[in-house]
Structure formats: structure tokens, C-alpha cells
Image (cartoon, rainbow, N blue to C red; front, side, top):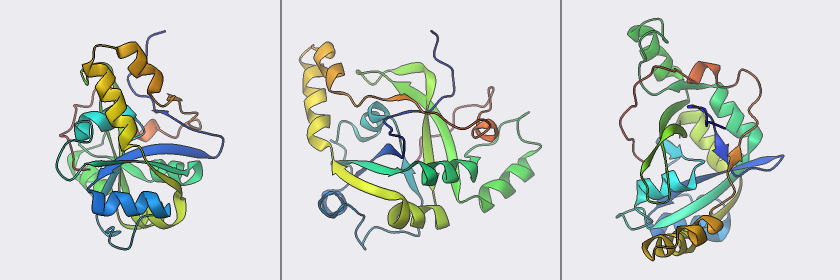
Length: 208
């Protein structure tokens, strides 16, 4: 079956959903050790979470980019994840989807979360013809993410290195078997209606 252009694919359970982030070791290692973000993690800045492991690999260069050497799998509550989506705004203006640019700017300023849809990636990090969700959290959403929604934090940097090594060795089949099992997320009806602009242009790649 053809993959729809906008759909959340994620590792999830009945109660949680796993998202990925990459940090420098001074942040990532304590977070994984303690199962929560340390006090040095800035709760007042925007943070971007990604349900797609391969999009995270594209963003952090298989955990090789400076400042992104530690990849975290952060398991959060589905309740929190869906709260963020309900309160999110698209990160870029879409003509014909938003009433006008001024109203979109007002929404963007007020929303504690924002969504960007970027091309999903394959094992070689090449773009696919459908999109992957990037969810930016700020203000209330960022604080709740760190202090209320987080269930567990796992260092998956070794997994990133193992998958990359198999891809480089020309064994994509073995690499694919290591990937997290990301399946369509059972979003409640209407949850994403305000976030799926069929003709929206791809926005710029945003910071982690």
C-alpha cells in the first residue's frame, strides 16, 4: 500500500511513544543514567523531538556531528505527546491552509509546540516521498516534556553505530533488522487535521 504523505510512524505501546534526540555527552549521558533530563538541560528553550530513528540519524550524522554524539530514545506518555500535537502550530506558513500570514504568525507565537514535516529517510539517509514528523516544544510543553511526560531515557548511540556499520558494510538487510519497529501511530480522529497541509512547502531544517 502507498504510504500517505503525512503520517506519524513511531515505536509505541498502549501508553507511551518513543522519540529521539541527540545531545553532547555532558547532557545525554546523565539523562540516560538517571532516566530524566539533568538540571543543566534548558527547560526554557525550544527542543525538537523526532519519532523516526532514521530521520534522527540523518540529523545527527549517525551520532558523528559535533554536539550530537549521544543519541537518546526518550519514551514519553502518549497523553503528553497528543497534548503537544493538539496545541501545536505548523512551523511555516502554508498559503491556502492558513487564513493569512498574520494569523499564522499569531498562532506560532502563542503555541507551545510546532510541527514540521520533513522527508522521511531510508537506510542510506536518502529522502523518501513521504514525510516524517518533527515536533518542537517550547515553554510549557518543553517543561512538561522534561518533568512530566518522560517515562524513560535510553542511550541508543551504540545502536546508531551498529546500524551504520552494517550499512557501510553493504548489508542493509541486517541493518534493517536492528531498527526500532516503527508503526503507524493510532492518532485519534482529527488530532492532526490542523497540522497537515497537503500543499505546504517543506520548511527549513531546524535545530535539535
